[in-house]
Each structure stands twice: as C-alpha cells, then as structure tokens.
Length: 80
Image (cartoon, rainbow, N blue to C red; front, top):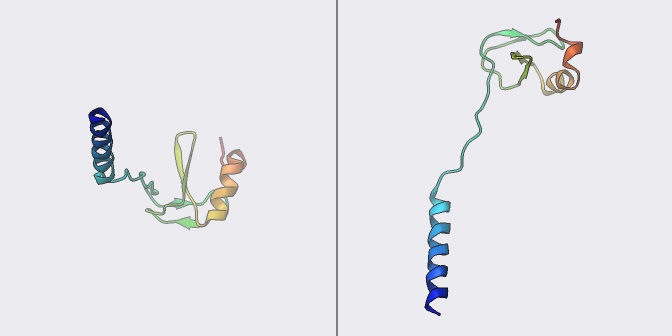
C-alpha cells in the first residue's frame, strides 16, 4: 500500500510541475522587407504575417486568399 501511495505522490508531483511550465509559443514568421504579392501584384509591407516560403525565398501576401492560391501552385506565380 505504501508503494501505491508513493507512486501516486510522484505522479501528482510530476503533473504539478508540468502545469507550471509555460507552453512553447510557435515562432511567428513575418515578412522581412517590403515586397509585392506574387499573385495579385499589390504592394505588401514589411511585417505582414501572411508569408510563405518557396525555394528558399520568402513571399508576402495581401490576403489569405492570395496566400492560399500561391501555396497550391507556386510555380504559376514565380519566375524561375
């Protein structure tokens, strides 16, 4: 019976420690410099969170719709 209580105490302690830790935040990627949306050709300002990477290059977008179009077929919008 003492073993069960000891194991239970250890598990409760581990759980308490786990809840005290802050959850890891995902890195929020933003556009590094001003650019042009490759889909609609609108100007996109530095800092926008609507970004996508393709072939080691970062692209910014004016809207979620443009970003989704680009991510489906990036070759259609990027010159090689």
